[in-house]
Amino acid sequence: MVKLLIMNLPSFLWLWKIAAWSMGLSLACYAILGISGGSMFYFRQRESPRPLWLRPFHYTIGGIMVSLVLLLLSIGLIGTLGHYGSLGHSIHLPAGILTVILVLISAISATQISPQRPWVRSLHIGTNIILFLGFAFVGLSGWSVVQKYLP
Image (cartoon, rainbow, N blue to C red; front, side):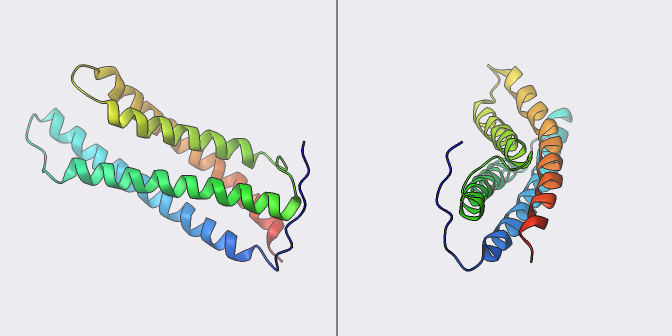
């Protein structure tokens, strides 16, 4: 493993505050996406028209969640490299990378859903169900990592 010079910054507490807010907002987005996605499913099952704002709203919240998760990834990498000078100090790194991959699969599959590819909807929904476990895994492992940084 490559060891980098440790950054000479006074404190990484500000970085962890951004990460905490980003994680909380990511989870809020995930919940909102679950509700709005469930609403789209409800309207599709009833074969009634869904509100015109629902799909763009779902896409917008999804885009925000993708941005927040990528911000979390960058904060984790920068913070860990800055504090330790290397990566791989806990299970949190693979948990985070797995969660980022799941979020990206979900986002990409969302853009591919169409009547010609009905299986993509199942991939999108299935990925989001697994993403619940990913968020739980990264949240629990992150909690133990953050405890190391607190004074």
